[in-house]
Image (tube, rainbow, N blue to C red; front, side, top):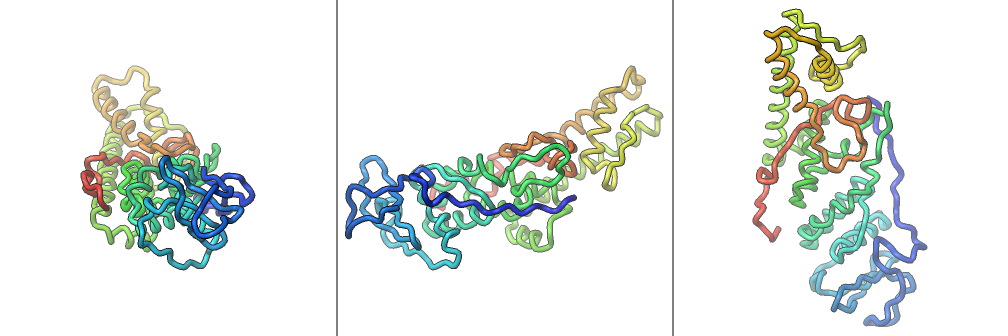
Length: 321
């Protein structure tokens, strides 16, 4: 598999008249002196900005109620990156649009939200920030490199857990289970630290392995009974039928069978249903258009893992977290 390609970090243009949906202009009034010319103003119905926040070289004019009264901003090294994360959090609080471009940005905004007790409100807007993310940059046919999101899933799943976001958590789980054999030792240790997450992943990995084994046994039975399944002459990398590309070829061969023997009909129908289940794409945010086993970013791993909202590893009734 080709190594992931690095992508340049993107930041909002400094000269724009708006930044992530917030107005960049002098407010009509603000306490403690005149405003900066490039101040970012967040307004809400019925709330006039009464607080001036200075984050490095950018001013934010906000109302103090959504932020609380006794929070303090910690010091950072990469000020441009940290300023962007702080602005994203304010955009989430004030229901303004923002975009998550990369893993570190998402991890930082989640960390800030945790510090400011704003995880619930960030959770309610985070999908909008990911919809147009570069992390889901669409692949082209023949490009078998998973997206940045797929590569980051073993780390992102912890952020999804903090946010208690079912869609984001499920999306990460699908990629982690599908790429289980490629998980690094460090990522594995991090996953094992949260037993609730780890148990769900192992459950889905075990289920997939069992389904693959059962499909393999059915294929071997048909071949031993001289059932003429045609899968072509292509070379399929991997150890066998656990390769979704090969399994897709088997499924295509089963669909092309003409007048199979009566003793084979039942097992063929069961096998087609089993393979169809394994090749199911349960991703919601992916924009590639490629399924498991197709000549795209998911060519070498399955996307069929699933967890219902009721099985999420947190208390869905809790409102204070």
